[in-house]
Image (cartoon, rainbow, N blue to C red):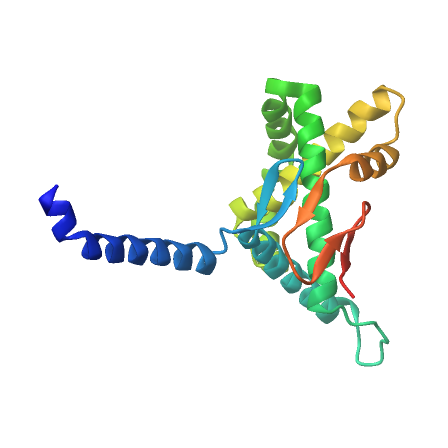
Length: 194
């Protein structure tokens, strides 16, 4: 006990220093939450990773499909963030529903769908050139969510439902909290705060 009372200020300082360092590391690596969707956190890092990929895609799109004479409305970073954050929220909703419907079979079905596509060697080069992603990142950020959406749309069709109607309803019923001073969830998509 004498040891603790003697070194108490040093222990407190060390504890505060370690906590401060941990906070700095969490913030600098983007591991803090940017949104909460039905109890699942979306990290700022996920948003930034998708933003980088979409920015590269958009720049490549402009280079490929526009000419100096083409009149095109430029997309702002804020608009791109709104679009990506909305898509990430939709991905969580789709993921939750498709996991509920398929359970343990989901991973096998996804692998079967993606394996057919990923056998093409040109896809790896295209993923890097178009999105600026490694093939594994392209697979996880683009292919897997698309496969889940496609699988869920098929299951809903078999049940006599429409995917778009289901998604609109799921968005309205979901509990979404965005931890940003710039954006909010309106029940359908992410909007910019006035």
